Image (cartoon, rainbow, N blue to C red; front, side):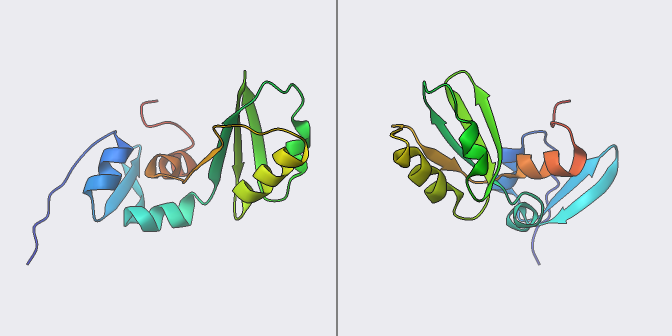
Length: 124
């Protein structure tokens, strides 16, 4: 038989790294239970594409296939999407002469699962 350890934490990255199974609780109720990978696959399917640019108008990015949302904070741009969104955004940027040196993609995490299931941040 294995050993069971109950870990209570607000640090989702810690739970994701240390746990074989995770219970997501909201206001004292279990709202999801499963492996970290399974919960992410089920509840947080979006990936984020991130880059910085000084170009002012990027509204056209919302028309790129697989892009769900574009958020601009100063020079930093965050795009939420799915599927081949990184390749499609990269191609659209190059097509318009924009070559950001820091273009990268972030996979969804257990933190994204918590936000999707509860509608609020862990520490709210």
